[in-house]
Image: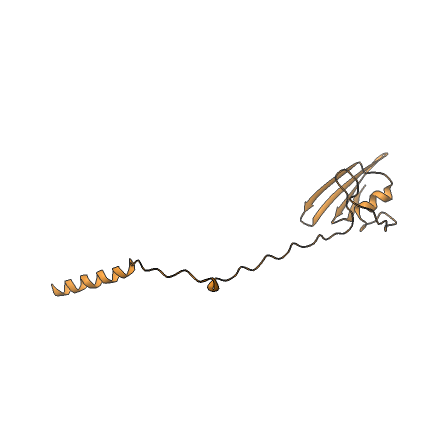
Length: 124
């Protein structure tokens, strides 16, 4: 009977340690790892004025392009065409700002695709 009593007391004392009300204190502020700040948002990959959805430029056109060719800006296209576009679609894609500019010419339609304010391709 003494063995049973000893075993019971030993088991009770072990279990009492598991249900103890003791808690570890919360970590001090110096023990908490600081969260690194978020990096700043990347700057836009394009410069200069761009086309608004109504086909107008958002600023003065520098007028550096001499021909309609890949790489010119949205506003340079309008300046070189000499008239406002028929339609402009402005959106955001994986590559950044994406703009489609439509010109309806007599007998044909021309669609200009821009990525980040640079002419990417032309569909006639």
